[in-house]
Image (cartoon, rainbow, N blue to C red; front, side):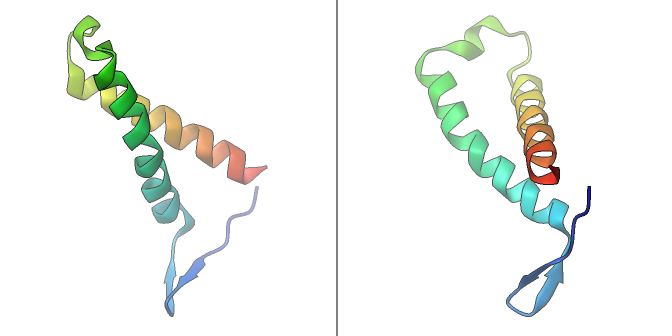
Length: 67
């Protein structure tokens, strides 16, 4: 697995920073879908639930990009 820095308008950014933003953008439709169908009603702590979903998406993205 080899990650290289991303040149973003002349500034080198760590690849994990870009993946954090992409995972957050992936979370937006998932969260909207969950809110629409009431998935949050069945969890004890909604903020912790969404943080866990974000970490799952981030881990999947890192594994996908790393291959």
